Every structure is written in structure tokens, then in C-alpha cells.
Amino acid sequence: SLFVRSLSFETTDEDLTSAFKGATSAKVLLRDDGKSKGFGFVDFASPEDCAAAKNAMQGALIDGREIAVEFAQPKGSGGGGRGRGGGRGGGFRGGRGGGD
Image (cartoon, rainbow, N blue to C red):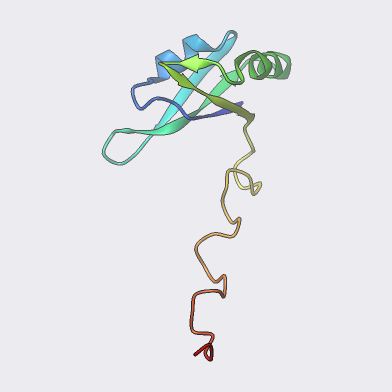
């Protein structure tokens, strides 16, 4: 599968499927209110089709937006931006004392 970022909020599953040659299906992720999150996933019948589509579509325009395409990471593999320096800790939020 491919992970596609920077989608227009108007892009539908059908638009995404038809934009990628050889795609078997695609899913634009939606927020709770039904609006697009601006990214989605595209599935292919073979790894070769997936790799060819990634190369062909990197930086392409869909619905007027330049997209970014990456190989999708399996769920739970640590990909997708979770856990990288996320909102906890950090230790640099004031309160260091002194400095007057």
C-alpha cells in the first residue's frame, strides 16, 4: 500500500483510486465530522504495481494539490509519525529558575 499526503479536502476514495494506475482500492481518511483529514491509502495487487505507482505519482497533482507519496507502514510498526517527540515531556518549558 501507499500512504498519500497533502490531498485536497475535496478528494474522494474514487478520485484517489482513479489517479493511481493499477490501484485496486483507495481510502481517504475522514474526521469524525465526515471531512477529509487530507491523507489516505492506496492498495495494489502486487508490490511491483505499488512501487511503479509510487515512482510515477510522487509530486503529481490530484485535485489541484501536489501530493507526497510514501510506502505505507504496517500498523503498529512505529511509522506514521506517532511517538516521535510527541507532546509529552521535552523538559524545556520554562521553570529553570535563576536568570534574573
